[in-house]
Image: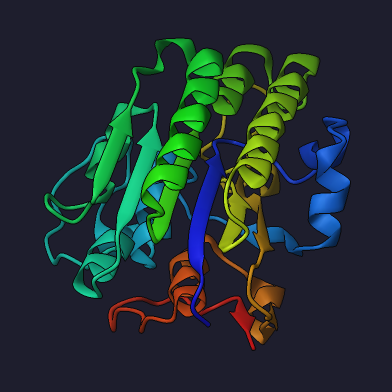
Length: 259
């Protein structure tokens, strides 16, 4: 496989919210995708540990980030951005939660775009517009787009509340704009870092630990055997497989797709 990839992560999006949010784009997108609705995240099911595990394909106990405060890795592992840099690929990231600046090491990104998180709903939309413009102008090989509003609303009004489902609906409007606004050469992967319950997350409850992984591939592929037990640590190896690069030898996840 040799496809460019856009990874969209909707913070705190639980699988059941995709149908419940009522967005008209969701059913058709899922129908033409590899859709895994019972994937698992890592414990602690908090934002930064989950993101570090996604991009470094190991459990938090290995990368050492156990809270939303970054600490340097004692035994550093090359993350997805570092791997792609080594392979000569261009990368970009768009985010509105400042702690995500530490997902990549200095010099590994081709482009980074951050907007302050104090107005998540508005900044999600602005980040989407910026990402579409950049993709169409520069055609990077890999793009990460983080949408933070859903988690913010979950903490404020509760997971699966009307306000939360409205936020998921808004996130899917952003995803629809990305899908319709960029070249068909890109595989689009949509996922979450964790779920949530009541007004919080971070526990081992299924509601906190279960996430969707949706792969709308631009190249012919099918779900691998690993998809039955998919984990957030499988996303980086999946992206490597789709982009035609070898995963890092320290990674513990496996690709969720194959030819």
